[in-house]
Length: 439
Image 1 (spheres, rainbow, N blue to C red):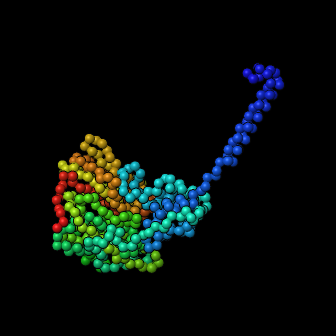
Image 2: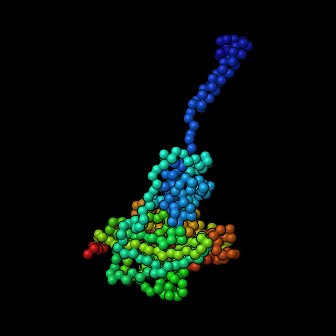
Image 3: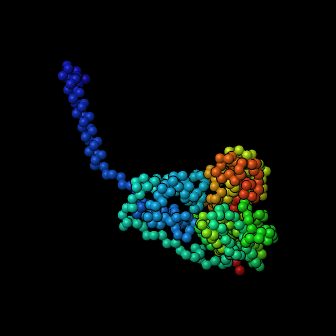
């Protein structure tokens, strides 16, 4: 239309000139705006990064703790920046196995996506230190028992020596309690004798002589116990893993420690040092100071009848448990368990109306990072609820944790080269009212 108004060849030239001038003007505006925009500053150690390390890493990554190096200072972090990037990108650290959105748990150590991006951006920018004036106060790590003076301390009966360069050493130690009456335990705190040595601890209760017999049959201190304690436990006292906080039960709930029972500590040791190291772990017990209304009990979903063929990369084992008691329950904790061939575990609850509730999903099982997970809110398991477990195993030669060369058929068992498919749940009975009160 402009050409029609102006007319002729000159009009077309004028239009081209106007368009060129317009494009140039727009380009100049864009350049000026870009030049005026402030540059995005990379994160620095003194501001963003150290705060992430304090919240997510320093509980373990400090002198005297389980982690192989410290992350307290700028120099600590810079020296290990490549390891940090690989570990957080691969979701190896901080160690947290449950898949997000498949169960909600207390004490999650999963690194939020935004914090992961901040750490990677800091490393990619050359790991700048930043203004030291922005450093937060260093964390204070209290000495002694975190829960205060205990009512009773259990201790391994003797010191155990782990040889140099020894990995995945499993020993069970029998500790007599000799209480003349039942005790209700509401808090448990573990103090490994050597935190560099102890990978995790599980505590079982034995009201028979089974553990004592196993101990007598093994000439070394304690007895060897890879998969489980070697007997059917009458209960448990939770456990410990690096980064875990001491366990406290809900108000009115207690863990029963029967009179005369033995507590059996299953210790998992790894000694990467060139010299032998020793351990003598202690356990602090706090007894109920108020009324106990419910007992913390345990149920299991398992399958003992499987055999995993050699060469199978993804062999599925399923198990189910239906609440047979005609009583409503609530679950507070869940503990999946497999051995070295395990790759994945998923547990669901199907309610009587057909609703399916996810409880936990671990899609990258690592035997060395198993633990007990506490639900953020207890999970109702009304009468008739069915719990379903799916365990997936890799019995191929390509499995880096394969203990058998060549692979062999693998069935249920306690040994290193055997397998297990089991999940433990800590539950209470809704209708139970014990009515115990302290004297």
